[in-house]
Amino acid sequence: MHGTAISDLARPSLTKGVRLQLDATTGKNVLLYPEGIVELNETAHEILSRCDGRTLCEIISELAEEYEADSNALAADVRDTLSDLQRRKLIEFK
Amino acid sequence: MKVPRPYALLAEITYRCPLHCPYCSNPLNLEGGAPATLSGTDSQELAPPNNGELTTEEWKRIIRDAAALGVLQIGFSGGEPLARRDLVELIHAAREAKLYTNLITSGIGLDDYRLRALRDAGLDSIQLSFQSDESGLADEIAGARAHKRKLDVAAKIREAGIPLSLNFVIHRRNIDRLPQMIDLAEGLGAERVELANVQFYGWAFRNRASLLPTREQVDRAREIAVAEKARLAGRLDIFYVLPDYYETRPKPCLNGWGQRYLTVNPMGYVLPCPTASSAIPNLRFENVRDRDLDWIWRESESFNRFRGTEWMPEPCRSCPQKEIDFGGCRCQAALLTGNAANTDPVCEFSPNRAMVDAVLHAINTSGEHTHDWTFRTNPSALPVSG
Image (cartoon, rainbow over all chains, first blue to last red; front, side):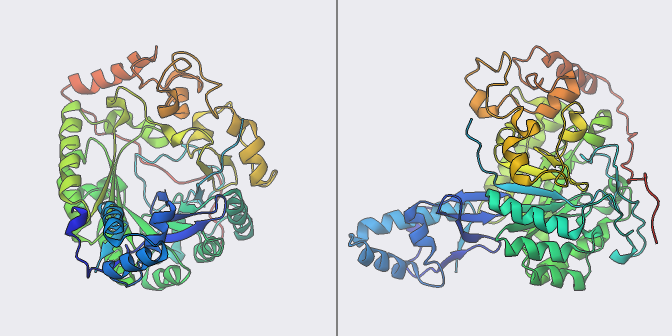
């Protein structure tokens, strides 16, 4: 699915079996899943730490406020990141 | 040389197993376990551990030491890990150390009570082995009536809400059933299916002539795997392990020796990979009963021998791929050429590639294939206690 196809009201959450955790060795956040580890950049971590029942729209506006960024430009980044993670079955939309 | 941190520990907590799969990668000589005597579905029927295996307290220390080294994931495997009565306690210890915990199991002996206890201890994921999609062939491969019980266990795992992977080892006898195996994984509601073409170590090396698929089978299977992966993307994660004899470049085994992974076997030997101790007999491996894990990972001869690229002979040394495939698999080089430092003979540039080609030639030209294989047996060095 292309990023723009995700509804504003979709609620992204980690797929069952995927865990968000701090890697004490590097100080970076990682996603852990069966036989796999993904190291997250700061943007991905900021997005994923809000995937707890909030809608995509809420996540985008919160991030725009926090980083004083233009929410239209930011929306594209957030959608791209989430659709990439969805393709890898690390998040799902409810 | 800067020593990297490890990411994953494979905890082979016992070599005892109720199944007898002829492709098992365990060593042929399984020291220090007791034979499994399985009857009924009660895991208590499995023989108790004997003194050869590490104790609960020893495993707990290994788990803490591994986490301190940087390990983020642990796989409990074997043998059949359910044969250890302290499994729940060990999984609890792994979660306390913040490790992502996988249980890699045949499912035999996993009843409702134990499943709930595992879930409550924090188990993150179960990888359930299947031998095929239907009981006739599956039970023949397992050397035990196991398939129907596995179906039952898969349903219980779903009910318990634990993420489920189905693991299939693919070989000549079941490779034509790839679509049915994927259907089974989908039907059972698994999140993930691993379709791993058999790699030739341990019992599989001994049974290679009965397990190696033909080129025609391999080509068809690859097409199916690619198409199914695309069709099921986002629904069922398909992980397909290539049959390396049919490749022209070797697999990047372990992502490099001593780079990301370590294994501790039932008797406490710390290995760069599970098959190293049997495939490379002239390398001395350390035991957690003599040395701590940190020292073994950083300082030991066994972990440093093939770390990095300095050890490489030609053609690896001057190869632009050397940081990509790391010269392939040390165990395979040792098993096929007698020298673990050689280039993996799967590589088209290896002076020993003819060895692999001869094996492929034999399989692909003879019309008759042997079905005779030697089933894996259990450790028999010690009597069953009790």
